[in-house]
Image 1 (cartoon, one colour):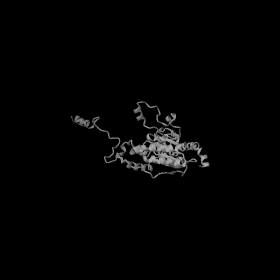
Image 2 (tube, rainbow, N blue to C red; image 1 turned 180 degrees about the vertical axis):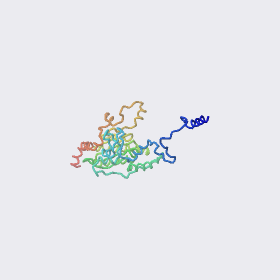
Image 3 (cartoon, helix red, strand yellow; image 1 turned 90 degrees about the horizontal axis):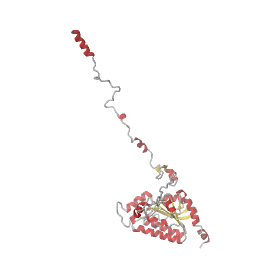
Image 4 (cartoon, helix red, strand yellow; image 1 turned 90 degrees about the vertical axis):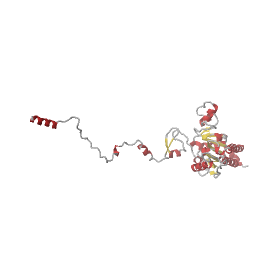
Length: 324
């Protein structure tokens, strides 16, 4: 019995119960106070933070072919995409600089500013709008006029800027253009107007519509003196501007892809209840239908204008040599 008891005690002492014991961990877990930041997964937004390090204003995405263009290359190419030749908008002073000979342009009526004669009120006042766009464009209004030289010809040049209230034509725009045309008639100079506009300026009501007749009247006297007027249509040229001085040129040129018309396509479709043809109101469509005389690439505009002026002003040179 004593042996049996001792045997049982030994058996009880050495017996192992499988599955109850736990194996020691292979890796010691970190202490509770230890930092566990290395266990966090990186956020997906980490890549975007690197993009912010690239300065803005170095590249521009083409709206037509979606190519990324280096801004210096775009400026050197007169704001024309080097791959698909899409014509980006360009400011009035940039366009003047690209056309006239160096230091030959003398601006007229530069101090003339618009007046809120109707006391227009809305979301914001007309006066506040004018002040806002003066800061954006460094212009007093939506057109820049003056006398300059293109090639060997002195010309009266008016260039509109779409950045200033959509290039809308108010009293100042009409008055500046009219005075420029009258000066050209007096000095026997050709007139060139480069138009880009959304139409008449709603803030001035009837006063803006009066500019349509005023500018056309001045051009009629200019034509009576047998002096040429070249109209250049850029994107966009619409509504009251297209229905007045922009459409009465002796020679009407347009930039590629420019949108030209009176009302927008959706308005015309809803009014006529008919589907418009493909490319309606583009410069190419109007060239095929006789409204536009030629489509000229921006880079070729100066050379083409020189060629046209050589032809249009040829008969004035013998008269100038003979005298009155």
